[in-house]
Image (cartoon, rainbow, N blue to C red):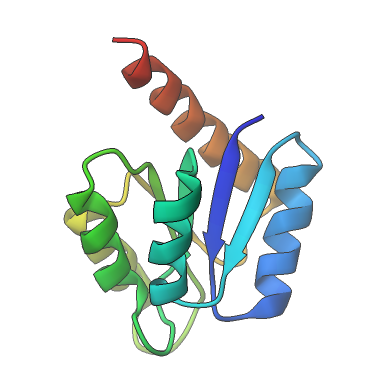
Length: 128
């Protein structure tokens, strides 16, 4: 069962993502910010990390940089709509090392497909 770490400061969003992923057979652990997420990554070694971009404390772009430094993280960056230009932050996340990006709100099928792509990539790279 693939393990997914969800890092988001919104507890309702974490719960929604958890429901979406557990319904398709993924195990999910949660963190409320980048610092907590990095600690969870170190202790649980998840197959995929889903991180929000805009969070208090250690935000998502910083978190992506630190996760990428580990060399083996599969990262999905997510971000919600706001007046400042969400797409720019998602493109920056991609440039900094996110494997895939999704703009909120997204459908369960979109999230599940992204996680499936990343877990397949994780399995393939692990078998080389």
